[in-house]
Image (cartoon, rainbow, N blue to C red; front, side):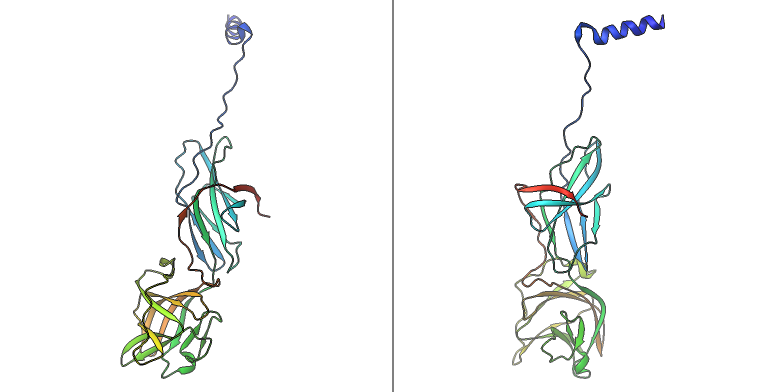
Length: 269
């Protein structure tokens, strides 16, 4: 009887010269959205919104040296985060992410314009009051070192003026206080307006130094830097800093663009 049932089932499925064809899913998931990048010292972190596709499998992360052109796959991950450690300070990197489903269908590249320029940074640096320690009162971002306040290499110096503390720059440099922050990374774009004026009757500009505030400095040679004050005593100021190596580059602004002329390529060696 069991054998007869099998024969009858076979006749039903394959009778009249017809056969059953499997159905394959060829629809890719939507591309990831809200791709964001953060530049550090020889590191770029990439994040994006999690995929909502029911058949999601993993993400592929891509990089290129321009927004358009061939994007090189550098990683596959199931997380909505990736840290690219194979980067050089002063080089611009454009990132895109795709979503892949369980059948291997890959989405288009994400549409977000997400680029970063890794740059040097430092933490817990100290400079001293220029009246008492003139040779240890200035800081050079390019040299990553303390300098005399009146050195041509100095980008800013510290001043204790009758108990009020200041960050000073010379007339050919600009500075502004962008307010309280929780870390040096909170400020991702250097503004190009809002600089403090020259001090009255002097050839310097200055901003009052406040613990927890971040300051943007626009150097004489057209580089942007940021410092965050972490501690102040009457003799010194302690700060974290980051310095953009690319002249005129204010860092990052998120823009949405078309995916035209963007292509996927093989993995990074």
